[in-house]
Image (cartoon, rainbow over the protein chains, first blue to last red):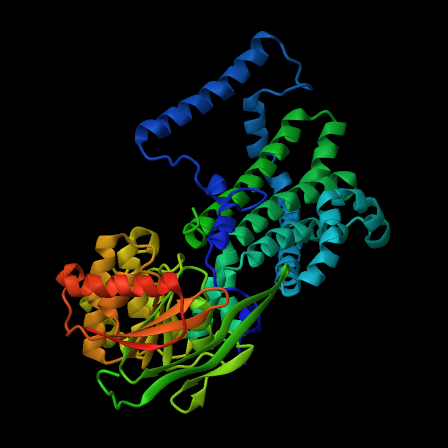
Length: 285
Length: 267
């Protein structure tokens, strides 16, 4: 049987597919990946000098203007806390990362599978999309108190919250990717006898890859946000829990140490997906 | 028929009619189109843009069905892509995420064949089209002409007996197009493949074809057939000879005046 996808398609290659490929929605992929590359020693030294100047400037500002510690602790004290309190904070870092990774793994899988399924049928997509948009736009942290009632103060409610935050993000972006059908490329694969599965595997998934990676990146950052927020709302451990603990005791160096660790986790996520994107989606830019 | 050619028919289109269902209603793309292509023949289908040429070719490739009529390869009805038929698409249609050699290996992967077994054939083809040494380049790093040569290698590598070419050089500049036409003639003379070549360029059609099928638009139907008898191999200088220009103006006239289907001997 001839391919029903191509059945009522007039074979005009009016560049529409290519144009759609250009506007990667939510955030243009090239915008995410084409950060200025650091090349020379001069640039590295300049970056380091600016960092020293900023941190040193804050240090001096706090010293000369006698900024009280409960407003902003001296950077040196934050650094000291990061080292001295590390053994205490480490288990909490692990808890947060575990919640993030498990929630993300579940959410990303659900998101990608659902995206692949709903883009099969424009009708299904029309019905499902409003709910996905609703989920994207609702802060999942709001559900945490409810989840705690049901699942207690452990990691489960937070993993569920992370999953709920990640999967619509991944799904909406992946769906955009799968919708970018380039008829000519599908016809190419078909003309060499490709099956539906092969068309997906060799053409549609690689074409969708830049958008999928954008979805994973945005989803994981949302996941970190939700994990931290959920720990703040209520929980017995995790970096979010430590934030509320240290702020209640006005232990600001420790409080800021937690923030720096969260920032490091977030940056690690960004760099990871940046590198994945460079490897798997650089053809797009 | 000038040659009185006794070769068997390789590919035939019989009464091909195609309607598209679109949001704005029915589009009548092709009406009762019939043609026979003989074994090892190089024919051109010539017509203005939007006259149903690509629709015809997609049907011949088994990419989509006809509303009425049929396409036959040898004694077989074509209703889905056939391993003996390979397509060369408008522009090069290379996959931007694969380098050149991986692009050429795509058909083998799709047919579950190991490309390494066909490495010698692929290398020979790459050498012939002047792409040896570019295996690891990505499409965006290649010129339009190089991309289209790569796509020709991709189609030839699986050794089809029929090559369907859908305005392959439409996006190329005139010089590169001349070069590519010479290459097609050379490949055709060396391999003896049956080639159906679609174009809207009259000179290109005359330069390449044994026979030209002229189509008229809306709906696409066969308006006239021309036999082109210039000896082979044809040189680019042929394009400026009075005999060639005479054929150009005759074909141009036939497109402008329309008219019923009749076979005409030329040259």
